[in-house]
Length: 269
Image 1 (cartoon, rainbow, N blue to C red):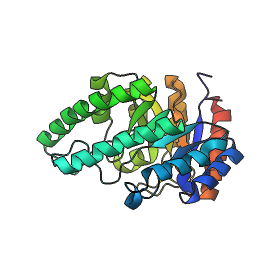
Image 2: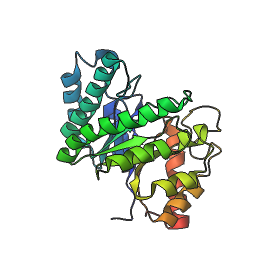
Image 3: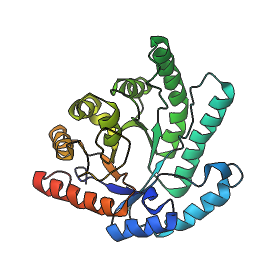
């Protein structure tokens, strides 16, 4: 099982209808990644009612479950104490959701702003992130859940890799989003994968033409998906893969395409 990759679909493919998303995941014999939890505007008032509903929805899920943690407008390392406290609350709520639903992986964004080019911002962001994750990861270790940090606007993997290395916990790993990488980074995907190495635990698969974060089919974009798979095979690492593709037809096309690449390369079957 160590060299067989687990695959998931994103719950967003069914317009955030968690019941239909579970049905589709079972139909495809894949796991499910909950990409959005409830409605943000109702989160505080209806958190536990929503959690009850999600627990009911996933009771018939046949395969594994992962969770995308809260990320919208958050910044757990903000200098604004109010923003920081709300952000930290959302991260801990993500852990609570994962624990209740049985998700073994939670994906977080860094909330890094690559438009700010001052070195002092980057230094402070790194040190504050290490401090934050050092505290958060203890809860993940006790729960037996892996937290992963996903690239969004990062131009390379250095910031995320250095944070993970500094925290040095088996429960803090990396997620590579190949669509975000293609859009925001000029560093080849091979370097991202090789620089992470065994830190790489999870991946988001979608494609684009470097023009927008369109979450298109793997066959509709400028990123060489087969090359990604060949690099993973070369490195002998087998991260989980979530198809973060929101159009149903393009999702089916992508699943078939990745299966073809796996058969051709002999990777992760």
